[in-house]
Image (cartoon, rainbow over all chains, first blue to last red; front, side):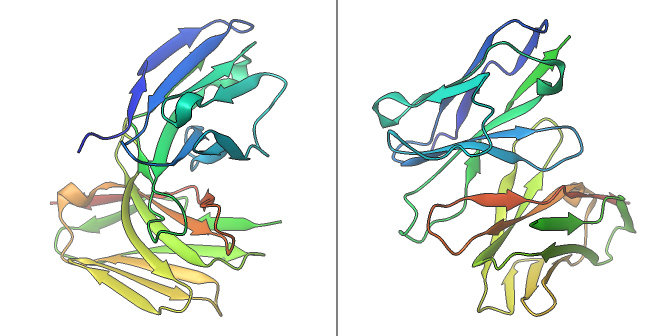
Length: 116
Length: 113
C-alpha cells in the first residue's frame, strides 16, 4: 500500500513570496490533515478535510494560508505572502473516516520550508 | 487552556534497559491517547492507541498506560535497542468524532550500545 505522498520535500523562499505544497493521501482515506511542525515542537493542526469539506480550520492563519481538496483526493496548501515565522515542516496526514474505528493517522514525509 | 507536556530533555539509556517516557495533560478529557514515533526528516509513525477506559495496552516490546485520574500516560520500551532512538510524540484525541489530535512536543530517546 502506497503511503502519503508530499512534494516538494524542500523549499526555500524569500519573505513575501508565495509557495504551494501538494499532498496525495492514502487511497480511500476520507480524512486529510495539514500540520505545521516548528523545530522542537509537536505537529500543530492547520486544517482538516473530510472528503471535500473543511471540518476544522480554526488554527489556519486565513489571511495568508489557504488550502483546498478538490474531488476529495489530492490537496494543496498555499502560503501567500510568506513570513519568516512560517519556516517549519508542513506535514500532510490521512486517516479513514472517523467513526469506523480507525483513528490512527498516516503521515507523509513533510515539506521543509525555509523563509529568508 | 489545554496543555500537553512531555519531557523536553532527551532521555539517554543503555541498550537492554527499559525506557519510560511521560505524557501529562491538563484541562482536557481525552477519549483516546496515541503515541507516535518520529525519526529525523520523516513524518510521525503511529505506534499505539489507548482508550480512556483502558488502563494498559501492549504491542511487542511497547507498553502504554493511561491514568485519567492522574491525567498521565506512560510509554515503556522494554529491552531497548539503538534502533529505538527517535523522538516519541503523545497525542490526545477529544470525545467528539472529528479525529482532531493535539500533540505534545515530543521526547527524544537515545539508546546507547
